[in-house]
Length: 393
Ligand code: SF4
Image (cartoon, rainbow, N blue to C red; front, side, top):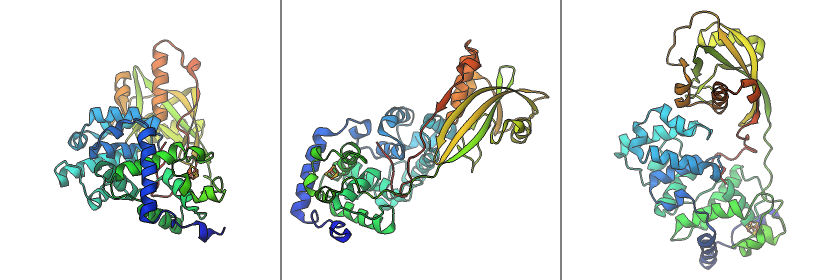
């Protein structure tokens, strides 16, 4: 069978076939859907928060963050009124902090332009910071049953298999084909449940490596299955090229206080706080700490080594102790001396929090050296996704 014969959706694109497809899918979803907190509401604001958190992040990770966030900020007005530091503190550990800053900015826009009510038209939603075609479609279809298609990592894979698409799903032609398919199969009613069912099916049954075709409610429509190509489709996209980086973080102490610095716009983790940190080797510690904070210090022992991944970077972070050798330099909005209580309240980078926890253990009587860990934090994304797509569990 050639590519063109497979890459079509004629087999679903007739009213009776669409109805059968939707009926089978919705019946399966009613019985098999995971009970997730954002599925118990049709409040657009809550669905929006869940959709932003689920971008690039697994469902199991998101649940606690979502519930904490909504307790602190139950609506657009409370989120808009918050300090950015409060928002980032609640986002801490979820990664991709730009999402949190854009969510915050969008809440302010909703207050100023929509009287605090989440907008209900596609164009208004799409105009908010951080919201693309997928997210706008997901929020409005889930919240109001608007007939809008969605396309994210799971439904890209599902769409490729259902239509037997053997091209690159990230290409312009691939995206056009998949959006067109997502639109063509939309039912007239229950669009929110239908879209969620597609994502759920992709996430739990039509998995990347071993699709459970024998449990699939829409197997009769699947072109890849009919052609025996479920493992070849979708075509593998280019693998992420990882880059190894060596970084240094420095714990400068003065009495009960430690020196921290806010990451600046354009830096990784902009807006979050961290210990003075730079790419390089231990020899550069005095000079780089002086450049970053204005303080003269003498480096001490290595406290720990943390390994973590951020997007395509595999970072080995060596953490050193240091002591102040002169007077404290004047502090400013981006450089502060903080005690343990203040450190607990500041939004920190993932590794900044690991180091802070290490210091807390040390002050509780556990020597820092014994608490040394080689930790791997959030895994780097395994492969890049088309801009319209998000990774979700
Ligand atoms: S039959 Fe298999 S490959 Fe096709 S959609 Fe269902 S689970 Fe995916």
